[in-house]
Length: 80
Image (cartoon, rainbow, N blue to C red):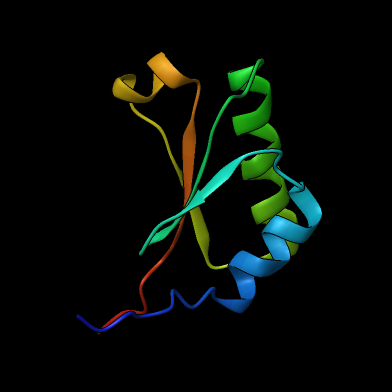
């Protein structure tokens, strides 16, 4: 079995450096930030940071993530 390394996009790395999440999981589309105490505040801050830095990222959150207080920051794929 070949082992492949996940490559972090430049925009995603900039986000991680500025947002400084305590716990996150690297995924193929982006990252999942976990263990957030004030979820609405942190989601708003993440969206504001993405907008202010004009990053090619989006915040994803759904009800299933509430159980472990998490949200995702995913890279927006380029238009075809």
